[in-house]
Length: 212
Image 1 (spheres, rainbow, N blue to C red):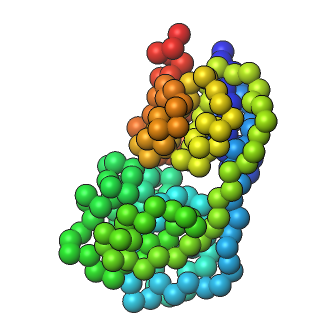
Image 2 (image 1 turned 135 degrees about the vertical axis):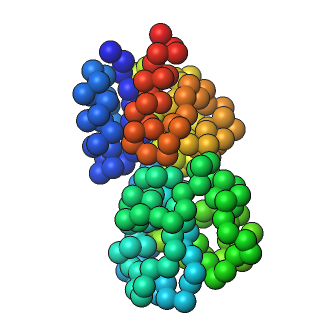
């Protein structure tokens, strides 16, 4: 049995902690980020050929605020696609670069919906309209509880964790989170092969097996 720290916001940590506890792990929750919606104003998706979403939080916000017939959807990660109620394109590599590599060319009229401060690679490359859906705030935490492994499910969480400082290995949800974690000096023990709950759980098991 391992002691595992989950860094997701508490309202999004329940399913992951439950699955890990079913596997016999001792799971602690210490959120390192919080998110908040930026507006309740409707977003007119009519007239777009594609909408692109990069996170489950963004997908839920877009569905809440969208007006008009939803066009084709491209989603980074299966969890994001699920939150959108399905997607026409989920790239094999769960990054903006991975999506661009598989996106139809030349691009038609595209709406890129993401977090405030999100990387603009997709918007700049495709000439897409950009709408900020929510804000992510990294939390200041003085000290982490002792644990064997830390799960980080976003680049923001990786940055917040690095500011605290830890030598505990981490499990990352995908390539962009891994890139930021390594850049920030964290030790990445495993990366989820799929950008979703099942991928995270499998990556935790891999990290524990390889580290045992």
